[in-house]
Image (cartoon, rainbow, N blue to C red; front, side):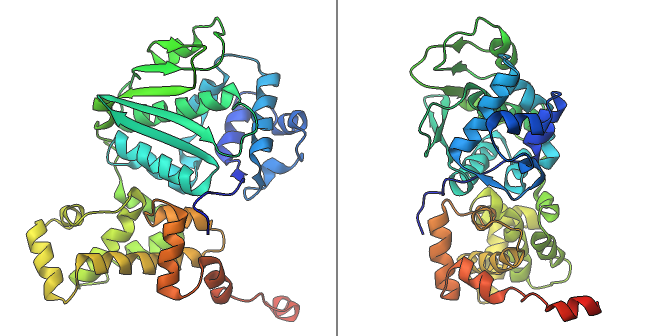
Length: 346
């Protein structure tokens, strides 16, 4: 299993909703991009980077407006983002939200976010690892606007970047300066979004660990265990399952969620003959099996929801647990299709 995602992109429903909100029929965009006319009707359809770029270029040709990317983000409905992206809007703070988005992209898409936080500045750039041509300007605008919108919606404050740099020529429009509210440089060496590090620690008032309950049926079932179990180790595992998508939770995080001190929680775990690390591994195993049992769950997204930094780490861990790959485990543990005669009887 390579640590690099394949050249495949899902076009989220949020994209098509935003396109329609701008008054563009999806069929017209697909026709302009020379892609199948019904692509927007299949939530599981995948396109290559080249085809994805063709969609963006079609939008630019049909609506040649400097603020098109900003409009797409501003009109997008947060609620219909993919689960791993949606969770970013309910992170602990802006930094946590950005890290979730970056990890999701690293695991699940050929677009990678490179984030550098140094000397009071957080610099973010996007890289399409299979791109054979420059990224369409509107795609860059969407990527940067989405991250700024994440901060604004998450914190409830009007986050203003330190600066934005674009490789494209100056469009002679104030659209970008009006939206970002900061200096915008054109004809730069590369596209960069530069945030103030101090803004990254702004909390998200809507931080909602329980949100994951509605993201997948497997997570909902896991959270339902909390009230049914009295063992402290079982309670810890349920909290871990709820928190894994934000990365690797610490003992202090779990103690806070359970309303006790870190020392008390450690003592109670030890009294039951376990260690926190063992419970973390157990939580990942149990939740991983449940998530993989859902045939609609993408395996790379499962890795993200389990808190792994890359898909290779998830595959290695899963082999240690089950002695096989996640794909093979799913094949062996999925219910076989019923014969036609059975379907006719029911």
